[in-house]
Length: 271
Image (cartoon, rainbow, N blue to C red; front, side, top):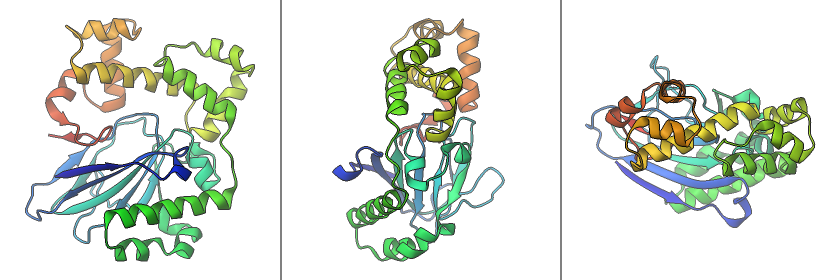
C-alpha cells in the first residue's frame, strides 16, 4: 500500500490542510479495514479505482465521491483488492464555505457529491477519470472546490476561527468560560457558531483537541505509564482517559496500539 501527501494551491490554503493519496494495486491483497478517529476536521474522499470500493460495517458501499463531516463516533471502512483513493483533509470550519449548509448537518455522516447540481455541472467524475496523473486530478479537485466556494460566497467567520485557534493551541485545556469572556460572546452564541461552522459544540471540539494531544503522546511513546498521559492532559484519572479514548476510537489505548497502524494520519488501518 502506497501513500503520498500533497499541499493545496495557495488559493485554498485557508480551507485545505493537504491532499493525500493511497493506493493498492494488488487485486489479490487481503481485505483492509480502516478506522477513522475524531480529529476535529471534515474531509472528502474520491474513489478512483474501477475495482475497489469502500464499504461500511454492514457491507453497504460508500458513494464514489463524498464529503464527510466531523467524525466523533467510531466507524469502520472496509475495502478489498485493488483501490486508489484521493483524500482531502479540510480545516475544521471548511464545510459551510463549500456547501452553504450548517456543518452540523454532516456530523457523523457523509454526502454523495454526485447529488449536487454543481458536481454534475462541473462534470467532476468525467474529468477525474480521464485525468492522466495524480497532479492533474488534484488540480481538478482544487478547481471544483474553488467553484463551490465561489458559488456560496461565504467568508470564514473570524470569531469561530479565533476560538478554534485558542482551543487547538491549548490542546483543549482552555476553559470555555474564559474563551467566551475573551471573545465577548455568550455560551449560546458560541455554540451556535460552532454548530454552523464546525459541526459540533465547543465542548465536544475541546474534548477532541485534548484526545488528539493525548493520542500524539501515545503515538510518540513519550510516557512511562498511561496515568502519565492522563495527568499531562488533565483527565481526572487513568480510567477517565481510557473511557474517553474508547469513546473516540472504539478501543482502549493498549488495544489501539496493538491493533492499528497509522499509514494515513487520523485514518488508521485496523489489524
